[in-house]
Structure formats: structure tokens, C-alpha cells
Amino acid sequence: MGADAAEGYPQDGEGPVRPVTVQGFSIDVCEVTNRQFADFVTATNYTTEAEAFGWSFVFFYLLSPQMKEQVSESVASAPHWVSVSGATWLHPEGNGSTLYDRAWHPVVHVSWHDAERYCAWRRGRLPTEAEWEYAARGGLAHSKYPWGDVLLPKRKEERRPAAADGADASRPATTTEWPCNFFQGVFPHNNVQSDGYAGTAPAYAFPPNGFGLYNMAGNVWEWTQDDWTLGRWRRVNNNNNNNDVDSESGPESSSSEWHGDVARGQKKKVQKGGSYLCHPRVCHRFRVAARIGNTPDSSTGNVG
Image 1 (cartoon, rainbow, N blue to C red):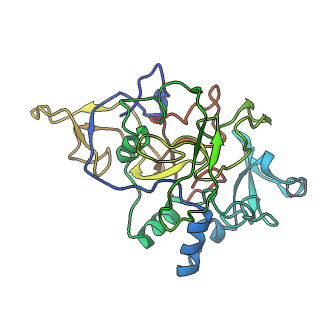
Image 2: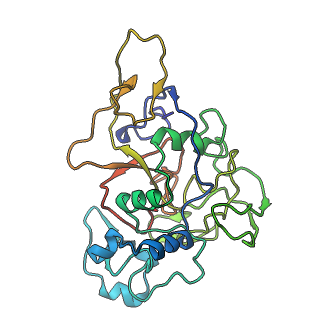
Image 3: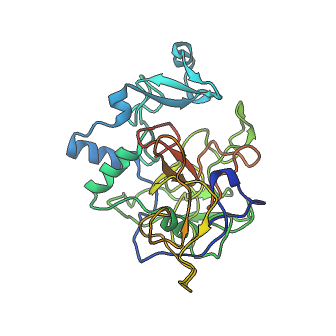
């Protein structure tokens, strides 16, 4: 897993490329949808952290003109991210927005804590970073993307995914020449939407990888089980001739063959996969090895 400095972002702790061993595991075929999350909320009466806080972050161009007039705060280092009162999984762009026509889109404005609670309700767990990366490559050997190493392969597919996890088998088939949902145009002001979407796309919108998994690149960032660690990986336990890393309990585990330095400051969790806001020249983080860290109570409109 991982990426070398020439391909990735060394400051994110992507490297070095290293062998990792994971045990057998199962994983959902796509991101958790609004419909699935609604079932969870109905069954448990759960309140997400964004709902408890009363606001969340939304990318500015997704807001209606009326909502833009009400926004007063933004992120100093990224002013295109604005805090919006009432922005939650049920109202992704704030008060007045709905999930109309988005039942099969991935749920957003979900914190790591929210994701953990959902997984527990499903009697599952979040994948480790190593498990996620293995699943995302779909059987390919150290590929840059879930479909290979070329950003825009020449292919056009029409697929009708099988019903899974209680999903509706009547979902429409999707035809696309694009491999995933990412930002096309001049970031951040002009998204030409060549892939067909300004924000989230349906969880089954693009062709699956070799394992039959959808949207392992782009669309929304996905939480993993692991604590966020930075680079400067170093080999330990040199008496062990097996160079594989047992990453079942996370990269910082004392049983691991490699150890990363825990990031300073507030504890963070690893997110993988990139989102609809990733751009090849600005934030090329919809690669399989790419990773970012965020605090476990954080939520935004591009994280699910």
C-alpha cells in the first residue's frame, strides 16, 4: 500500500510503498446511501453531530442564492468552504434543501462518530485504511486508481447492479464514459460537470472495480477505522524476516512491522477515496493511496 513521493503527497504520509497483510473481511459494495441512513435514523432516533451542533460545512457553489446571502463565516485558508446553519444529512445545503432525487446518493455531513454508530447498528465496523486500500484496487497490483493507472480510460459501460444490503433491484442502469465523480474545470469557481454532476452522484453511478465495488474514487470521502498518522515510517522488529505489515489493528499498532508518527494536535481519523471536489491539478486525492485526516466530530458536504 502507499505511494512514492513522485506520485503522491509525501506530507500526507502516503509513503513509502510497503507490503501489508490483511485478514479476510467483507465490505459493502458502495457508499452508505441516504435511503440506508434514513432507515438507521428511523430505527434508532439517532441525532448526528451536525444536527447537534446546528451547522456543517458546505461548498459555496452548491448553495442557493438565498442561502449565500445568509452565510457569514468561511474557512480562512479555504474561503470556498462556508459554515451553513441547518446543514445536515437530511438538508445537505442547509435549511430549505432536501433529499429529493437523492435517495441513492451517498449520505453526507456524517462524522466519524456517526459512521461508527451506523456500522454498529448494521453489526459491522469501518474498514481499516489497509483494508480499504486493498478493496479499492479491486485485485489490481498497486494501481493508481480503482480501474488502473490511466485517469480517463476509453470505455463506456452500462450496468445494472444487483440488489444488495436491502437495495432496490429496480435502480436504473447507468451509462458513463467517466470513471468517477471528480471536479472538471477551473477549481473552485467553474465546474464544467463533464461527468454529469456538480455535487454527489448516486452511489452506483460509475462502473465498479474488479471486486464489484462502486465509487472507491471520488464522490465522497469515506471514513476508516484508523487513527491519522504522518509519514516518516520506520522499520522495527528487525529480527522478524517477514516484511509484511499486519495492519488489522491500524498502522500505529505495536504489532506492526512499520510505525508512523502520530500526527500532532487533536486526534484525527483517516479518510480515503477523495470526493467530487478533487481536481487532478489541485487536489489529486482520488487516487487509491491518497489519504487525509480529520477530527472525528467533523462533518462536511463531501464526507460520508
